[in-house]
Length: 178
Image (tube, rainbow, N blue to C red; front, side, top):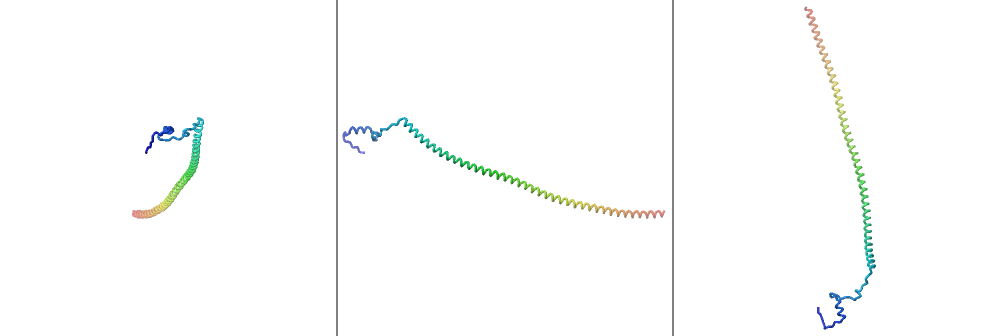
């Protein structure tokens, strides 16, 4: 930067301006420095209005949040009711399945018992038939034994009679010879 200086051409106005200058800044007119200082009441009023505005905004935010939370609560309530209904239905289904299972187990036990009963009845009938057959065979064998004994007795009697007659003849011959 070139500085051009020409002798002592400074005026008192320039000198005043030069002394008011701060760090190369040029101050504006004095009116800018003149400000109206508010009273303490006005300051309190401004603070109150500012705080009131802030609180109003905060209240609005809280009301919006309250509304959102209310909606969330409603949604959660609906979901909880839905889950409760589903849970109740699941419990009813479970109870129904349990009763069906018990009935089925009873039916299976009954069927198994009936099948065993049929098998046992069949076995019993077979054993009874076998027993009856064996009784008939025993009766037949006893009859044959009795017949055989009678037949043997008859043969023995005939033989005994023949011997008795032979002996009678011998006795008769011996008596004659004597």
